[in-house]
Amino acid sequence: MTCTTRTGQWIRTAAGVVIVAVLLFPFYWMINASLQPSGSLLKPEPDWLPVDGTLAGYEKALSTQGGPLLDSLIVAGGTVAVSLLIAMPASYALAQLRFRGAQTIIFVLLIVQMIPGIVMANSLYAVFSSLALIDDYVGLILADSTATIPFAILVVRAFMLSIPRELSEAARVDGASYWRTFISIIVPVSRNAMVTAGLFSFLFAWADFLFAVTLTTGRSIEPITVGIYRFIGNQSADWNAVLATAVLASVPAAILLVIAQRYVVAGVTGGAIKE
Amino acid sequence: MTVLAQQRTEPAAPTPHRRRRRGGYRLAALAFLLPALAYVVLFFGYPLVNNLSMSLRDYSVRSFYTGEAPFIGWDNYAAVLRHPLFGEAVFNTAVFTVGSIAFQFGIGLALALFFSKRFPAGGLLRSLLLLPWLLPLVVSGAVWRWMMDQDHGVINAALRALGLADGPTPWLTSPGWALPAVLIVNIWIGIPFNLVILHGGLRAVPESLYEAAALDGASAWQRFRHVTWPLLRPVTAVVLMLGLVYTIKVFDVIMVVTGGGPANATQTLTTWSYQLSFDGDFAFGQGAAVGNLLVLVATVFGLLYLRSARSSLAEGGS
Image (cartoon, rainbow over all chains, first blue to last red; front, side):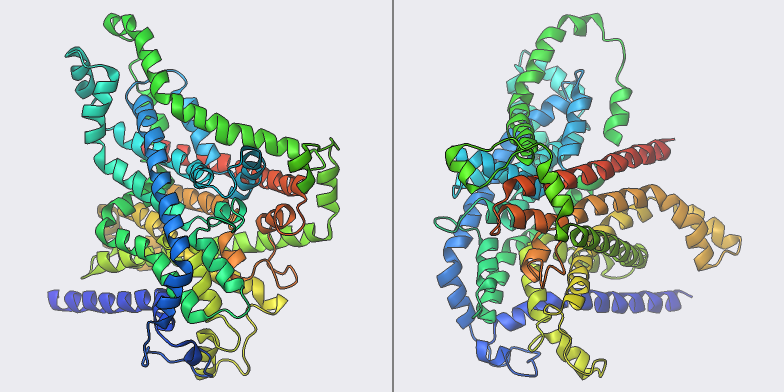
């Protein structure tokens, strides 16, 4: 009995490996192609392994897309900072200092998350062009934050609801100000939720294409997503360099998945059902 | 939402001690909320009102320099509705959205059921499947565009090797194939999200119900049909509604894989709105009008989502 179920379990594992292999094949193919010389990518039969592997694609990627990678890093880092600076205090107020109207604010935050990005881009373009925020790090950071701040508030607030209010009330009784209570008790206790919100803000801003393509002209700054897009649009696209850039652009997400898996899963479900 | 439920259970009558401090309390709450409120007003409120006003004006590139944009009432909406592309964009949006959601949900549910059983390395394999969801959509789009290349793509090579196709399929260059092609890519991208949420829902179904059903002699299909499916319904509603809201605004995938082409075969309301405003036309008023139609659709589904999420939690709580 135990023997058959154990075999059954291993059959499931084998099937699971096959499923993962099929669904993740595109990434294997991306890495495979990024390591081949552009000439062999154009052969009638593709090479299933990078037999004559070369780093030429990566050299070209770094030389042409190094700037965009850096631009994306700045924008993503800035978005994390702005989102957390605004979301942490707001979550504290919504979760711990309950007051009338909190309900309405949460409802508004849930609704604005559903506004299609293209509408935000269209509106922000008009506003930003009069404020000289087109082609500007600050402009992109503020635009990306429209997507990350509501999410961050909802995730962090949901966590802060679980902090016993006695904790902050005890601090208040001991004479700590609201600010002091927030900084020395609430923020340290909410570290995990903060990491989740920060992670997702980073991933969103890093991956953002819509704001990047509408709010920059390519004259000064160019995020990596736009870099890849223009790279492909180029008729003489060198696919090994394009895909090498794509691999480099995937690195942050891959690293985060490995080192912060539990925060990632918390964020996926937190964004949807807000528990 | 737990959110909504929890606040209603707040003690209705504050203690006298608390009532005394209420003024300071409210002031503190307001101070902590101020940055967020200011942000919402400046970056959602103002732009959206502005968008509405743009859609009622003759807004062009020149308007940004001269500041002149004459009021033309509903003309932009009329122009958009009469535009030969309107019908096509609505049709493509509908096919893209319904097709994506149906397959993402079906495959996601099958995988969630598969991974709901315990087996060695199950958790690891499941978390690996999150990868397509976490990587930038532009990256996934670029990879698929390369894989679907007519002459050098691996998909055509594989079809040829398996003897499934006579000639190369023009995935991205033929108007007939382009919509199915972007649909495939978007389904692939959406599977992890459906898998994770549905997997969470399945784990909430008590094991004892399955055991009871098995004792009563229920087959695997009957257990699914009469235990899993009804108990999963609230989560299903949430997944489908969110899927709708997300899919309707898909932009990156289509732009990178086909750019809305060939011959507008993959133009959806979202990419069309972009094209009207930014890509050559610079008809910002019309772009804004299409955008507002999208807001309308998204809000309707959004409210439906909030309602189903709330009732699902009410059910779960009782």
